[in-house]
Length: 525
Image (cartoon, rainbow, N blue to C red; front, side, top):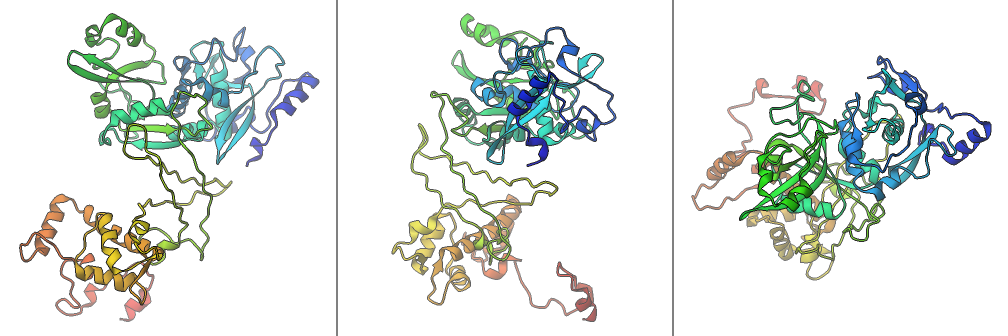
């Protein structure tokens, strides 16, 4: 952990109160270095809240998502995450500890907590904030004498090294740092079945949600004709299904962190559709105000938005007994070169040596016939080092199900139903090839060899799937020489349709180097 995150709030506050001084944080000083390389040319002054207004307050009448406004930093993902978090006071209480004030025991020192690699980290800051033209330059509250928002942003900037580090920071990262939850990313333009139901259940589980619109670098923060901002993140603040005659209309409520510029289509603030609702429901849902918050129909959301992030909270994050909760299990492991670093599934001979974890799902979801599993792979940051490219594969464990004699191996009679149970149907010659390739001398496959086999087959069918439907049909028709409707694929046809040992003689023009680095060998030839 960096030294800047090892300060002790209680001890420092006590020390500065005894000395009668205001705390100045040497680990995150009021200077261009704390702004970062992208902002070091910005001319700001660093001032404490009492130098900005007469009666500063840490929190005025509670924390509301409507009060959270983006400044000049370009960190809408972070702002949208804070706005989503503020909908749940019990979550905010974890991030923003109580008992902080500009009046009682004030020493110019504040602290906030963030989740990092499985632990909650306490981040200590002083209250000197970037100011330009007498106003807070970055994140601020709609109430000019409220400062928890600006101080929270400063603490998060310190956590990440500088204010510049927050520019275009993904909303999903902020979600995780605020909760320790697991983030799902869904493409609204290609949504899963029961998309609206997924959103409803996420609300019931107190999940944090946010949506964004993709853009090119030239289009960032450009407003489209419908009032939506490209390259921008929106907090997700509500969901409701209303009846309009015989129709059910699914509505989603979002908020622009700017606190202005809103959707102007169906069910927007000025939409005539609101008059079709009864007075009570209309009064509950419809608010006509330039506050950045708006309702839109589900179909429009899927049309205009490109990403929906859902942060599923861990049991320790949710204190509400009414909320549905996840069960969480942590597994710790490492890849060790020469021992269990088997590489991706392209490495069929070593892939099985990677760390493996077996998970058994025993209870069904509410009102469903299945049980949902979320898997998140986390890599701890190491100071001065880049992250490694890592990944994981999830398999349904057909091996145990079809190991009828419970021997720990699968024989030839068990292998076919095991493969067919995963949706793979192979002819006899291909099955024989698999047994020869992965079986032992008794023609039996251990679990590790079965896993390598599945990885190999997955790669074959993945490559076929990337061809596109028309190309797949063309290849299948070519291989179906008897016009029987069944294609028999041999092991050589994994690479091409009609393999040849030599085509029209051997020529130096046809010799091409691969990725081996053996140019001398090729020249000698």
